[in-house]
Length: 314
Ligand code: NCD
Image (cartoon, rainbow, N blue to C red; front, side, top):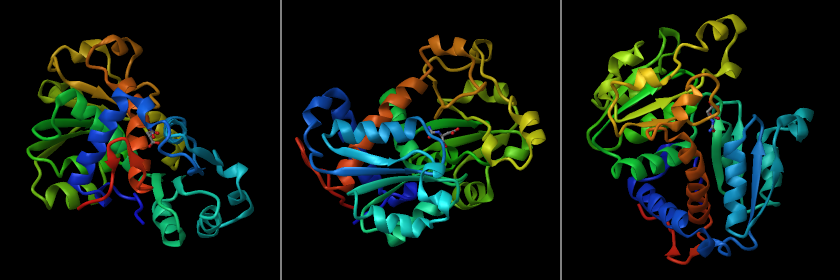
């Protein structure tokens, strides 16, 4: 049995396979409408979510499976003080696979230790968000045809933004990828990313506070929301929340085929005028989330697809 807790839990070959299958699904979703029959997904969400939870549920329903779960800690026994370990032991008897989002770093990892069904980390605090990364990789590959040879700008809250941590970890495995980390000093990416992933592995990167200065170099611009819920005081949040606002004029110097991405929800980071720009890829990115999660569920449950099994083969 396999879990997906960290983006590096998947080999490059497995990621390729997932992306290939997700592309096939995107082209003909109905061909997959029976493959999950009789299977149940549990969504255990201790933190707010729109896209991640609903795209997991849509993915399972599209496969012909069933879903159950809770959408907030308040409506589960967590409010009574139940531990993640006990909850997952019980849910293991109710479902075949589960997706868990939790405010505590390492919660999904902890759940996996006690689970008898595959656990997917749907976001653990400010740490990792591997399925958002799969969605991002799918979007980049469909736009750029390749996951290598890219200059990737990540902008905003690089400190608490788990999508950024997982994406850097993943893209750092591909050939000739450079990173430009754009953030205010206080929201710089943590050491376990900058030092352990980039510096130690000799991956080229620069850090700057100035988005416009580097705009012309970027193949991907990944905008992020300042993560209000992870701040200790309101004052700091208010001061930093509008650090970067992407407007059409700031895009003037950017490459014509740059992709503008955002895991969503956006607050003010991208003005709505940018939505009309062909470089805007964020809604497409959100839609891809369903296809890649269908592929992932099939892989983890070893479901037979019209194409055969999406097994794991390192
Ligand atoms: C992200 C998250 O939850 O980390 N949202 C998502 O899953 N698409 C980003 C965010 O909340 O800012």
